[in-house]
Picture 1 (cartoon, rainbow, N blue to C red):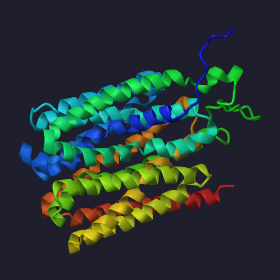
Picture 2: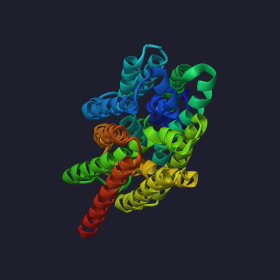
Picture 3: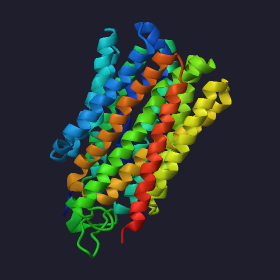
Length: 418
């Protein structure tokens, strides 16, 4: 009699830890952003120096994604997921130590290294452990982990800072990372790769189609090698441009609300939390749209145009001082620019096999993080030079306009292909 435990299907437990893996790395940066006015005053630093914290984080993430992607292809899901949560937990714990600005800078850099693996390993888990019909929809949910992190950090860090300080809030984040690691190891043990069950496939396993492709290959059959490279390069470029605008906005949004519109620290954090909440819904929603077969360039063009409108409304909020414009801009930002990641990752799932998914995801993620790196620097430079945010919003609008041009080119190229 076979006494082996029955294979569990990929369910909410696995999806929750995928979301947690994507969201734990950015938690420190979003938490610092939500309490930026307090952090700046406590450390006696300038707005540009504060922006350098995010820059260090995203620069380390960009280098890590670019340099470690191929290495990630050769390591197990368990090893990579452990690395994600351990590195993120160490970064949050280090930020809780009262060692001054340079120690905090090191902590944010470490949190960036923690963001070197999540997209690649979670995409590979989707290809190898989740039935094909669920993958694109799950991509939208797990990619919303970043905005879920923004939502949680933007609400929790200001509230906790009133009680135990921003360093105490960071320490609680480290505890959260440890709990998520334990849940992740349990979930991975419970849901092994589909290929392990290929000889005794049951209702939980998606069988290979008649063409001979395996459950871990991209839907619709293999994409030619050269076309894969073009797709990866185009997605990387779009991710870079969009990422620049995203983090120029995200990092300084609470500070903009406090300084330019007179919001309190908690209300400024609530503005960032609203963007995160809308971003969660947007990523889930755009993931569902992608799962119905919508072409990635079509969605990327729509998102770029919405993000461009959002940058314009941010400019209007600063020019008029009207809070209503700020909330509209937050909604547009959350619904558009924050939703791009799921489209990029879903496009990879359609085009790249599991054997090179970690490295391909790493390259695209490196592009995004390179944009994330420059965004805070650009906005911080404009604030330092002019004392205001208006020049920064113009620069953000320019990046989204470039995104729209690139997406239009990809649409035209797709129509020309036989």
